[in-house]
Image 1 (tube, rainbow, N blue to C red):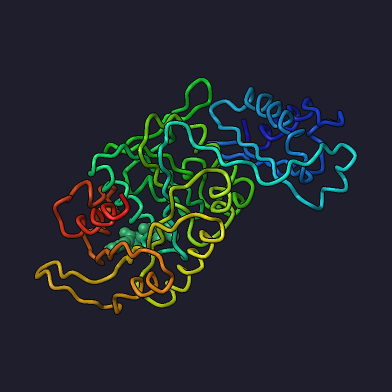
Image 2 (cartoon, rainbow, N blue to C red):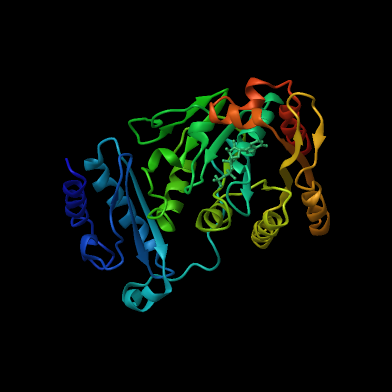
Amino acid sequence: MSDKALEDEVRAALGQVQLPGGAPLATYAGLSDIIITKGAIAFAITIAPGLEASFAPVRDQAQKAVSKIAGERKVMISITSDKQQAQKAQATAAPRQPGPPPKEPVKGIKSIIAVASGKGGVGKSTTAVNFALALKARGQKVAILDADIYGPSMPKLLGIEGKPAMRDDGIFTPHEAYGIKVMSIGSMLEGDQAVVWRGPMATSALRQLLRETDWGEIDTLVVDLPPGTGDVHISLVQTVPLTGAIVVSTPQDLALIDAKKAIDMFARTQVSILGIVENMSYFLCPSCGTRSDIFGTGGAADTAKSLGVPFLGGIPLHMDIRERSDAGTPIVATAPESDEAKAYIAVAELVN
Ligand SMILES: Nc1ncnc2c1ncn2[C@@H]1O[C@H](COP(=O)(O)OP(=O)(O)OP(=O)(O)O)[C@@H](O)[C@H]1O
């Protein structure tokens, strides 16, 4: 069936779902575009603030109705509140719940650590995967959630292919690599879809990947966040209790300015900063082992000090880190005795 035909079927199904006032959801002004990908059907329902409770059954009914025609695709429906809709929806408004909804732990997961960076390309994902593997090497049960909608890289970094399996009840069974369970938002995206997945779609996908995955018993879930600060970060910090965040930066000043912004965002949302990791901190000559501080190392340590957050150490710029990442054979798993791997293990030791 073509995507357009499937979209029409979804709309027809939504015609059978009633809003609190009795009108069909299909014609509701707050219904977003319906996005169809190979792995998912996603849309958002915008409501007035305070109507969350009365729209929860609408979401459930829509989920059921669309799931019937979704086949293998995951159905992702997010409810998002918008002040501009407030007046329109006033007539059916339910009493407003005071304060934000409580943070809910994720079943089976003891601790969640987010890995963030102020900007792209500083080595956040490489650090996240090797940090997770270092925790595993220290005896923990570890999982990774790749929430980087702009460049999901866990499938490549861990040599994972295809979509995760889904049980009959719609719950994902995560991939497994090097003894770590892995879910990536990349399995829901196709090509260049990050742009349309911004906002409600991305947060809805994050919620489902977190909550509708059979993680088993996990000591630490490492979440690889998108670079910068945005919807995915806000959604994560508002909905799950985080143990804390690690911010990755390169030694250059500019990257550190961005890192400060990321730290500020976590501070404002009461997430504790576990520390800053300085990536590509120094160059280790592959043939003679000589260390050169080509970027002027120490910037992250100074920034950490001035912000009163821990400095977790530096990771060398080393060809082996890049080559093994590209090959899906991360250094901590495949060369744990190397100095580079030891740098990641030292970070894990400081955090845990
Ligand atoms: N310490 C390192 N030494 C050598 N190469 C590295 C190092 N860290 C990361 N890289 C390489 O730098 C590139 C960017 O790394 P990575 O994808 O982890 O960055 P990122 O911050 O997650 O980027 P994005 O924001 O695009 O997701 C990759 O090719 C990776 O292999």
